[in-house]
Structures are given as C-alpha cells and as structure tokens.
Length: 369
Length: 74
Image: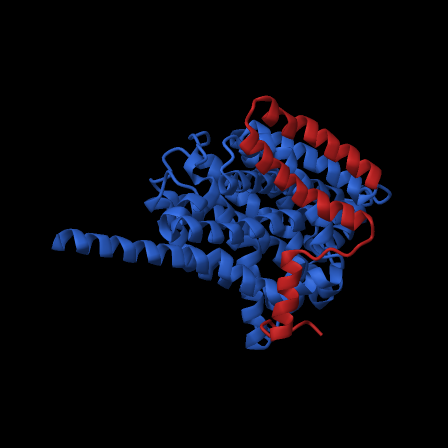
C-alpha cells in the first residue's frame, strides 16, 4: 500500500480543483456546437446536476480520509474485485492524461509555435510533468492559486476589451433547441470539465484535515472553475453567435478580433499564455495521479521512481488514443458523456452503496452475536 | 523517430529501471519494466506506421456499433 503523507493544505486543494476545471476551457468546443446559444444554460444546469452527483464522492472522502480511491476499492470490492475496478480507473486516468496532452500539443501547433512539431513540444512538457511528479504533490499544486489568479485577470480583461464586439441578442431565443440536445450539452459539460474531479480522490489523503469541510472545498473549488468556463461560453456566444460552431477554438478567434484604437491588438496571446499555464498544471496533476495509480495497483513502494515511465506512457498515449481529430471530437460529443458518467459518478456511487450495505450488515451481525 | 524513441527509452531504463536492480529490488524493477513495455510496444508499432488502437477507441467503436450514443452533429 502506498504511503501518502499530509503535504498540502485544503486551500491548495481548492485552488487545484478550480484550476483543473478551468483548464478545460479549450474543450468548450465539445458542447457549444451542440447547445448553440443555449450552451450557457446547459453549463449552469450541469453544475446543479454536479452538486447532487458529487455527494457520493464527498461521502467517500469523509468516510475514508486516509485512503485513496484504489485503497477504498480494495476495502469495498475485495482484493481481486478492487484491482479490476481500479484498473478501469487507471485506464481512464491514462486516457484523460493522454487526451489533454494531445490537446495542448495541437493547440500550440495551431496557434503559437506553428512550425514546431507537436512531438517536440509534448516531449518537453512531459519531461517537466515527470520532474514535478518526482518532487511530489506539494510542488505540483504549489502554483495553483497563482495560475487561477492570472487566468481570472486575463479572462476579465478580455471580457472588458471585447465588450464593444458583443451582441446580446445572439442569446435569443432562449432554449430554442431540442430537449435531447440540451440534455446532451448538459451531460458533456457535466463530464468533461466537472466530473474529472474524480482525480482528486487519489490525492485527498495528502490533504491536511480533509475530513473537515471537504464538501466546501469541492463545491467552492468547482464553482470557481465553472464560473470561468461560464464566462468563456457567454463571451464566445455574445461575440460569435451561431458562427461559434464553425471554430475549433472559438475564444481564440474572438480575442483575435480585439483592436483598441489600433494600439492594443493581438490580445489572443494572453489567452494562449493562460491556457498553457492551466493545461501545464492540469497535465502535471494528471501525470502525478496516473503515476501513483500505477504504483498503487502494482504495489510499487516508491512512486517517484516510475514518474518518467508514466510520462512515456502518456506521451505515446497522446498519439494512439485517436489518430483522427474528427473522431476525437465526435467521441467527445456522442460516446464519452456516457462512458465518463459511468466511471466518474456511477462507480463511486456503487462503491459507497456497497460500503453502506456492508457496514449495516456488519452492525446487524454484531448485534445478533 | 524510431531512433529518437530508442534513445529516450534507453535513458529511462538507465534512470529508472537500472537503480531498482542495483538496489536488489528485483520485484519492483520487473514491475516497472512491464509498465515501460506498455509504452515501448505501442511506440515502436506507431512509429513503424502500424495502426495501434487504444482501449478508449475500441470502446468508442463498440458503443457506436451498439447504438449507445447521443446523436452526432450531422
């Protein structure tokens, strides 16, 4: 069993959750083409659904403050069953790490470093992530509050700068989409930025006093992250309207349009910097979690010793997950919400239910004895 | 690419696998080697232009085939 010492504070976890969710800004293009001008409503409704669906996660943290998700699985499902369930989570963690790595590689090549091949940028990114993982969770999460502050300032400024481009009539008519499309948008928004906080169930034993106010930390952190996503969606819809569906990175396109008195232009570089900071944070956190997951499942005593191996696994995963970016986008819209719901919400719920039933059965048998 | 990949994998073996065996921690060394193989085999196949399918891609194909999915954008 992996030994995890209490190295970070609850405040660090809160900002880490906020940054983690915020880093999915690039993925708003998964749900805005489906929801159109009603996407902002779907984002709000997804947070409300999340507030209910995340209760089992918080209860697991409260019941097992010293055990990570894989250790909880071993207790609830038994040794073999626990390994099988943990293996599902491990594949999920590896897949998400790889997909996010691929996203940042493609983003950098499309926008900032157009002539540099993605395998070079991803290589250096992976090296840094593995290095941070070797130094531990406190290093990985140290700059979360700084990254959050910087990205919030950039987002607010870009909102102000582009105010003259906004046309709020694009939001009308409200909810002019089929109900299935609204449900789909809510589901994608629920799973892709919000549900990914399942990663934090691997590190909560490293957070000091997590058994007290863990719900507050999860809800406030996710609300802060979601607020930024909501701002992005409103900003993009108000500027591009239905045309936003045509772009892969709509926010980047909207910021390209900013020109204040011919002095202030090319503001999109600020967005690129913000995304790079956030995605670097998110991917290093994901690599850290994938590393401790591999160490936990294979019972390797020191996870630090396999950080570069995990980084290599994530690196090659970013190439083999989805060779075609069209299929990747279609997967994100059509199938991922269903698979992700099963892994992010149903499995933890099942774990909690089995744990409660076992506890009751145990108490009942103790009383009869 | 195969050359660069080989150099990187060799460096990883030297930095992460060899120390396990030097410390006579064979068990963890073998486990770490197996994890590295999971990275090496797809890497060499991919760089040799042989198509490799990830578990999630296969799940995607399965769900599409079963019809368990949201409507596509069209």
